[in-house]
Image (cartoon, rainbow, N blue to C red; front, top):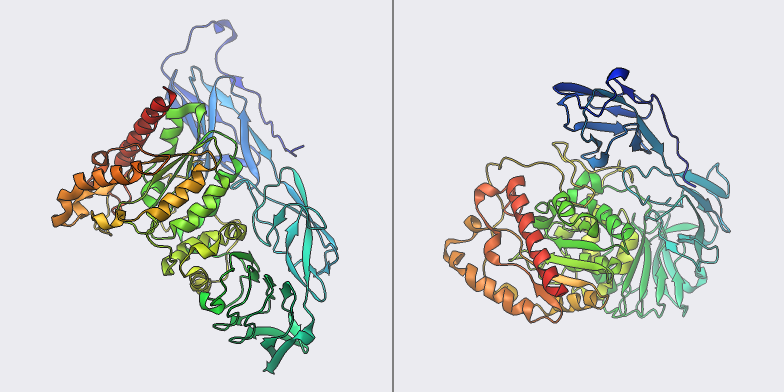
Length: 589
C-alpha cells in the first residue's frame, strides 16, 4: 500500500451569499486563491480572471511529494511543466479559495548482504527510501559501500538470493512498486596460483594465466597487493566465456585478451583504460556488464543524459498503445508531444525517443526495440544526411560521449546490446567519456542548461518555448544520393522491430533548405523519390510523408538547422499527426 501523507488545510470557502444559491453565474472579474500548505508552494497564490474562465497555478512541491488533488468541486487538470506542477481550475464562476492534496510516495528497497559483511556501520540488511518525484525508476545502491566479502567480487543485485530472479546492476535502475528486496550477488575469485604477476610500487600486475575455468574472476589482491593492471597478451587464448574484472583494476593493455573465447565481460566504471583493441580476435565477445562505483556525471556534462529518463518512459508504459517517435534532435526538439497527446486523446501514449543525431543510432535502436510490443507504432524520422541515423556506419566515435553520459544512469541498458554489431569504438568511446568525468554528480540530478531550461517533459519532448533564432546556425544539410545507396543495416534493424509485431512508419526530419549547398537545392524532388523507392521497398515499412512538407528556412530555426522554433515545430508536429492519422485510416479499411 502506498504510504501517503495527505494534507488537508481548508475546505472550499465560497464567496457568494446563501441567498444567491441559484444556478445563475457571477459576472465580471473574480479572484481565485490557492491556500498555503505544507510540502507545496504556489508560484503565485492568487490570480484574477473573468468569471467562467480557467484559473492557472504553478506549484512547487517538496522532494518526494506530488499534487494529487484539490478541494475544488469543479473540473481541474494536473500536469507537469518545467519542474512545476501545473494546476488548471476549469470554468471558475465565483471567487474561490482552494487547498491542495500533497501526497508523499517514497518506495523502499531493502538490500541483503547475502553472504557478505557490512562495509561500514550498517548491518547485513540495509533499507533505503527513494524519492520518485522526478523519475519513476530509482537507481539502486552501488553496493560496494554497503557490503564486502573476502575473496569475492560483488557483481550486482538480484530479487532472489540464489540469483534466479530479476538481476539489477550496481547503480542501475529498477521498477520498485511499494517495496523491493535485493540480494547481493558475489563471484568467487579464481585461485591466485593460476596467475603470473609482478609487483610494482605496491601494486600487482598480471602477466599471465594458466587456468581453464569457464568463469574467470580476476582477484582484487595477489601477493597482498591490489591488482591494478593486466599486460598485453597476459590472457591470450583464455577459454573463459565469462570474465569478471576487479574494482581495483586501472588499466588493461592492448591485446591483453588476444584471441580469447570471452563472451561476457563484467567490470567497474572506475577503470581508467579499456579499449576495443584490448580484445583483438575475441570473435565471441558480445556482452558488457558495467557496475557503477563512481557517481554519475552526465547531467553536469550534456543534455543527452536525459536518454535514460526517456527510456524509463518507454519501460514504464510497456503494454499500452503507444506512438513511439525516434530520430535525431530534429524529433527531440520539433515534436510537440503535448499536441500529439491532444490529437490522439486517450487512444495512444506518446513517447519521444529522439536524441542527438551524431551519436550512435544503432546502439539506441538496439536498446529501444527491447521495450517495443505489438501495440506500438514506431515512427522513425532519420535526418536525410546522417550516416549514423541511416545506419550507414556501425562505428562508434568520440561523439558517443553524448550517449555514454546517459547510459551511466542505467548501465543495465548496455547489456541489452550485442557489441559484435559494431565495427569498432564501443569501449573506446566509453573510455573517452570516462576520461571527461569529474566528481560531484548525483543520481538525483535533473538536467538544466545554462539558461535554466529543462530538456524533458512527460512525453520526452523539449518543454521550453523557442521564439527567437540565435545569430548563427550550425550544421549543413546535404541532399546526396549516396546516403541512400545501401540501407540494408537499417532494414535489418526494422525487421527485428517488425518481428515484435510493431508497426513502422517512416517520415522526414526537417530540412533547412537555406543550409543546403546551392548546387544541391534542386535535388529535393529526386531525394523524395529515392526515399519512396528505398523505404517502400522494405517489407512491412511505410513511408507516410511528402518531403515538401518538411522544407523550412533559416528564420524557422533556433540554434542549429535541426532545432525549429516553437511555432514551426508546432507546424511540423501537425504534419506528423495528419500523416499518421491518414495511414491509420488506410490500415483500418
